Image (cartoon, rainbow, N blue to C red; front, side, top):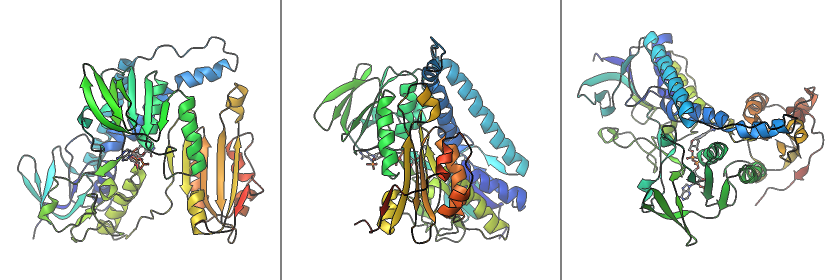
Length: 459
Ligand code: NDP
């Protein structure tokens, strides 16, 4: 059978764009791609990129505070003008979107700026009714923010909405204690918004190393976020131009804006999957094997829609590996076991690769090399903020199992630490590396003696 395309990609985000571009430009495939929103997807349009620019915008007050400690008497951040920032942000996102479009066009990919749904194992139907056939279909539709199912929650925003606000709220409530809630609490507080964050647990960033979580929890309060642990909203009501929020403990308060950052779900609803034999996990994610192939041989899926490790660089790697495997006769799997990540808080970021202390203890004996100290730059300015560095080492093999950093630019540091750890480096090899002085990162190669040793497997 003659197909219109060798590959049809549904979704023009990180994973879909990479797969389409590599399949077309490097492996000569005839590729079509459909995107219902803007090219670039969550990361570029309503995620990592605008978020990080907002983090930079939000740190002015912390920076001027520090500079006052260096003798810049009277240094002030001045007034933040959201409309100026927003116009620059919009322009930057439009520029990036064009870069994505140009890259696809140069590669020879046919871009369809509309929604596509699957009609059968080799056919997609576009919103305008056109049908396209393809030897392979790649689903890279991403994820969508999810709420928690309480009355009135339609009044609340999700992270997508924050990048397109007309004005900053005076008083905001953030619900959740994950990546997005903590980053946005940092941003809003930094921009001068009175920020309340509620989280049902006892320390934010579940899944990260406990010591880093405790420091992040403390930092949120120190930068002015009114962080309330162990509670959650039960109901939202509109009251004039405010939203009245009731909490579990029976109290209630009014906010200008409420934002739910309570997780994301795979965007598979309405994709036409009922017309296929593709299997879904209970949360709606597409089930794939290690080659990103569904149980239908012609249909593959990459990125957040598969709910493996929901991070942009992972989706990109999965999309690239798929294109090389299927169109380049270069079979490649993606190793999801050792993916570094960072949460962009201020002044200190949380960054991590490998096992947490809690995970390492559950697996076997572990030596913990950890240190907390006041870094030179902020300590000189009079701040008590502490940096934390931690290496987890297998006492039998001397291999470094995990690295956790809480500090300025921790995301930059963990990227480099991830290389030796991925290569199976031992603690002795870390120690053999001569320090770069004076840096905070030198602690990673100068911690000689374990801070504690866990000889027994934790129960
Ligand atoms: P997360 O899964 O990180 O956090 C969700 C938060 O919502 C958790 O604190 C969770 O609590 C809470 N929550 C979930 N359900 C409920 C409920 N019913 N009631 C009360 N609280 C609830 O999701 P995010 O939305 O923050 O981010 C989504 C994903 O986006 C991340 O997992 C990450 O993969 C990606 N991301 C990555 C970033 C980065 O790399 N820097 C930045 C932003 C997003 P609990 O912990 O108790 O379950």
